[in-house]
Length: 307
Ligand code: SF4
Image (cartoon, rainbow, N blue to C red):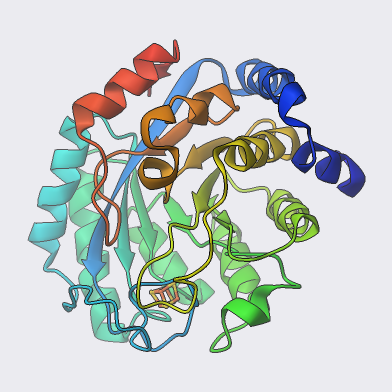
């Protein structure tokens, strides 16, 4: 793995040298993951009213964001979303719920949804918060392939972002998912007010967990959250960060998720130009995504195929 000082040098790359940095990142990607884009889709299966206090999140009950709130969707509704995602060309479909974890009754309902999705031959993923090995094992037995649980930010910055659970809680869940044999999808959010050194700290911690895929989110500040007034990252800093992740995670599926449309606007081609190999297809948890046609066109323009 590159060193911390190499990571900082990547994040401090002068504008004039950025095209060369991105070329190197693409070269690493093509060597390790081939010229394939991995696209995933999600459903916000349980929205809002979360008791946790993550500073960036529109779904925390402590934030007045006007986000829609509802209880866990019935399994048949979740399946319908999964089938649509498959039709749209998503490689993987994730059931995402707000909250610290899942109550036993909700877990039973989620297990049924996983069974239905897996029976359709869809790569089933879930992001259900902090779970123990027993719950994760039940999900695996039901047909779940991948568990998503972000580290969110660097350990040294985490207490500034969340005080209702700990960084150690997050690492424990990520490790438990791997332990029961699930693929791990684990990334974070950049632009939360962390330093560049903390961005490097985050990517090194993710590399240490060796996840299958890495969702890289960029803060798109939501009105009503604690971070509503943070300035978003510049386009060049987004490119430096994508390249940073590729240098430290050469063989992983790196997807640029939240913030792509809002921050990159008409330069979303930079996702692939800077070394990532995937993104979210369709809508996010609380914000709308591109049209499927526009996203497919981005993949094709990058010379990648979809898988
Ligand atoms: S636990 Fe999840 S849903 Fe709840 S506030 Fe944090 S990020 Fe948002």
